[in-house]
Image (cartoon, rainbow, N blue to C red; front, top):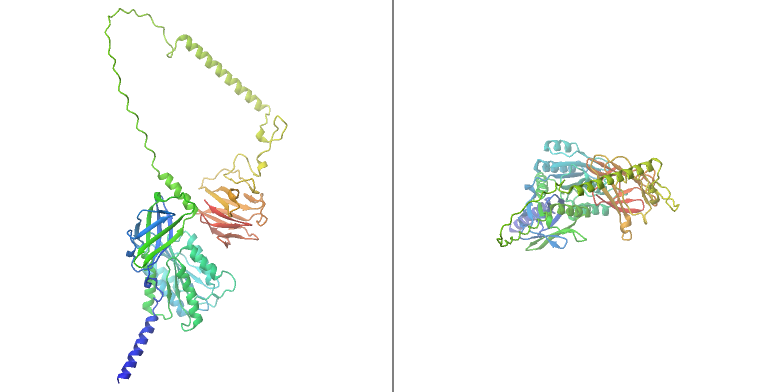
Length: 558
């Protein structure tokens, strides 16, 4: 009897352990022993810089001004103002990516839909959600805020017979989170998949990994294996989870069993993770922009050790910080005027008063004696006559066809004087349209427009050719308020780089739309690349992006 009871207790314990391992919190970051922080992004405003920080604990109170240090370059800043994200008005975007390929089953897709519905009900009213179905291609919904509308949108998602293009979808969704205006200041990517990628060509796993790490966007992954006991399915789930672990504060969830309570738990944990992130605020006047390299570093001291993270600050933002600091500098106070010296009163000696006979004074004209006044008046009249003669002579010379050296005429020695075409710039001399570039070694020939400048906002674009050997000779600048064409042909492009045979005659067009700067490839042979990725159609740029145009790589700033 005792032996039977002992066996029953052992089997009951094993069953409880198995049930515990089936929970979806197997990889939840808040269960980790060592606290961690991750810098999501930063924003620069008129008087302050805000740093968005994710942390891996269920409670954010372990981070405070007493145990936190913020560094900009080598300078330590003053104690930051730390705000819990849920107490801020900053909008959040939840981008949900669902694998609907043939490797998924409808019950797993239904599980993903339920989790998205829980996220929609737990988020704040001002936050939005967009859903992307992933198969051979990706199909995106609008950015939605209403929970009922979101529920109706996901209800129609069903499994397909298509292959999975997981790595391509990750790269494209991160790109949209960085460029679309509807995306909130705080953003995250939530992926529902079994981790399989069936595409033999296209984006690699390494490229997707780099896109995640470079973006600093938190990635939440929900692994849904087809067979939880199959080793290959477990390995694919681990690969999917790697994108969460290398991101800035994401979490990986493993769901081999689908229970209703667990679905609500995952959705609530993702929203709670965002709400418990932090915003650090520092006075922009404290930042030292004189150093060559710039980075923000946050260190939080804990009993388990230091939790810290670093993010680079783009050169375009450093330039903007300098401009704001100059505007905020107080005007120097005027120096106080010296006090007047006291007057020395001389003693007056009383002398006998003599009778003074006043002589009649000569009458003055404008404070001058009459003779001096008439001399000055005559001089002024002669000067006016001389000026009139000079003006008359110059007018007569112009009417007889006087030719200026600037028109390409001939000087006194018989040398032909060249116009502006001699330095490689085509267009009217009267309007250089803001284009500047070194002409000593570069063969780039900017074609200068001569239309009147438009009334819209003007962007001062700078293309800096990358490479140590280039120096100042690789800097191209131009002003743009509408569009600007770039290529090898001077007749087809406003900015013509004639010595680069890898460029097409008309290679690409930069233009302004909705107060954003875009670039478009014009169907070229060698293509146009942004941050190492070839583009198709219109692509929104950020100041600091890198462009590959023809044989060279440029950094674009404005």
